[in-house]
Image 1: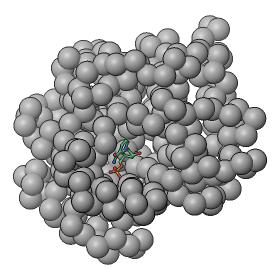
Image 2: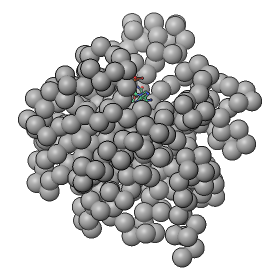
Image 3: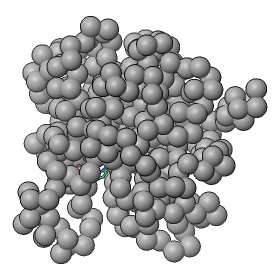
Length: 306
Ligand SMILES: NC(=O)c1ccc[n+]([C@@H]2O[C@H](COP(=O)([O-])OP(=O)(O)OC[C@H]3O[C@@H](n4cnc5c(N)ncnc54)[C@H](OP(=O)(O)O)[C@@H]3O)[C@@H](O)[C@H]2O)c1
């Protein structure tokens, strides 16, 4: 089994992994993927120095020595492209891509490419990464053993609104609305991607996951009172990071979802997302705009008309 870990700036979130084995044990994959989302007790920083420790821990936990670190900054289209180039040079298959990284309620600021950070990182970063890896996913999947794209959204998407005239929130910035919009965009993206993959007859599926309310560092930018309540009572009403990982792990490995995509999953069950996410025109429009913003070709019109 080869596992490639694509890690965040702090090496806490590994948002992509690869399994190169048809005989991967039912236990090893969940163990690996649970490890993947678990918060390592590692000092944060934006240099590569912590990477060897994380890799070693995962190797120990999964009894798998083919674990590698590759750097990718999702807030930079250039970094994503560089990562994909390096990844492809390795000429190894990709069976599961989990789009997990994210920021929440950050102050108004932009990514390297000038996008509002929630939209640019949470949404466009994953949009570009997935699209650049689609050919590898397609080559790696097979009928009856589809490759999978699992994208982590949030219940916050239910209160999200997509402002197609101001996707960057430049008119009136609200950190909460910007986060909700990015998570809503990920649901629309997943549904459109699934339709595209199905129309192309590709052996790849795409599902979207809501992990629930999980006790993590994601809340570091929220109001201090909320942080205090979380600190005092978080153990009571928040999921642990391991519990928060379960639905992603389920989406990544369960045989129940073989060949099935376009599902919104919560607590390992399919549930309905916000009504507007099923709007095909909106999905198509957002996809087209995202292609323009990230500089990739929009193949969906040809696919759906042909
Ligand atoms: N926790 C919850 O209650 C909850 C609820 C619903 C959905 N979610 C979703 O679950 C996912 C995981 O979040 P979490 O709760 O585990 O929060 P977290 O502990 O803050 O993890 C988010 C990770 O994303 C990484 N990241 C941030 N900017 C990045 C970049 N430019 N490039 C690559 N990685 C970057 C962060 O690294 P840095 O530390 O360097 O910033 C961090 O490791 C997110 O998509 C979040 O929206 C969480």
